[in-house]
Image (cartoon, rainbow, N blue to C red; front, side, top):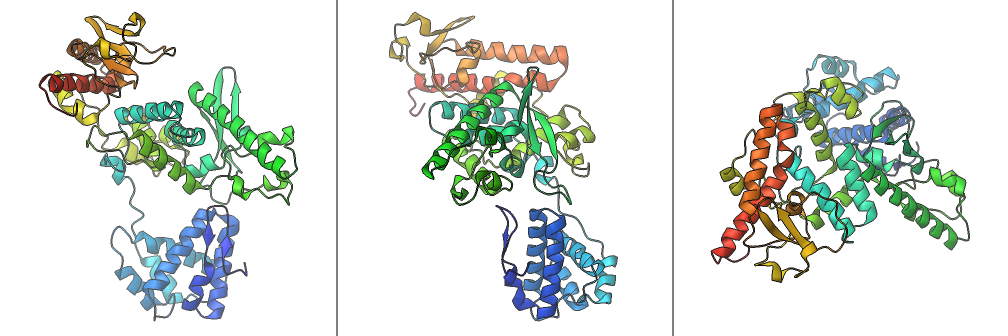
Length: 484
């Protein structure tokens, strides 16, 4: 702890020496000892939070005696209702300082901190407000994101690793740190079930990969992660071969699922390097991967008509919100989100935004062009299709042929409904698209009347918007408008 810079893990590198100018030498040593205690008993992220809250306090109270009554009162007055939790975090560290027996904290300062009533960090605003930029994603947005990511991967526009990272976040709601800590051995299958044994995060007094919780995943994600295992194994084999070494098959299960190979050292045995997190991808790279995929798939929100802003936290918000909307209690939500208690789960069961109760034709036609869920290309007639003249390419509906399929590969999707969100679909200008739209809306109403469950009834809302988009484009093309 004598160093002036502490690298606690692959993500946390603290410039401890930057607070030395604010303190006398003795108090500086005591503060380092207190932070050292937290470094041994708490997560690296918690230590980082304490350090930067302390640095912020020292910055704001320069010229005053550190940790004096006057300086704490001055700092409290500089905070508002949304930031007074800064002092709450600092208070916990100051109390621990005193409990550890180090001098430097006046008794009257401790007495003041004990009397203060401070608000905690604001929780749940993005969820309860259903903010379209930072809050939970709608079912339509989620469907467009996952399908868009898979399509982009299939076309070679995004990498396997970026696709796995985004879909793991989207389908499990885990934190980036949990995904970064995964090893090959954490993928578990048996009896037709697929699970990921996620290392737990934000567990006080527990080190890296000390506790786990299994999370079931769908087969599609499992198969994609198996491809990632093969990719990771090959990458390690190549890097080791360049250093004149070979990969021991018994070591494969210990490899990080998402590695940072630039940290691989040729002067140390691989098995020793796998005991810590040095070879695991930094968590900020996971956010970068989400941004890269988002920039490629360009998904538009039906709520704003603008591109969706994506970050890992939004997927957790979405999982919690969907569970709350399904009537699950706080305990179930806390368990699903891997919370250690229920203090943050309540936000998902209060003031929940509802799914749109009814979508009629007029509403659908208005929202369709905004949502832009149609991914194909509108063509004047069959002779303009990529597979013109091929009767097997025709997409049929109850009211007749609606367009052509531009793909030569096998497709098991239900046509014509699934086709409207497919990049290979080429709807014909004179196809009976309005009849398809009316059919979808009628089926939605029927399901709702039968089940009284909006979640089930709205399962095809994204398709309704896609068909509506095609109907609107057809009308615009017939009217001679451009950019349709």
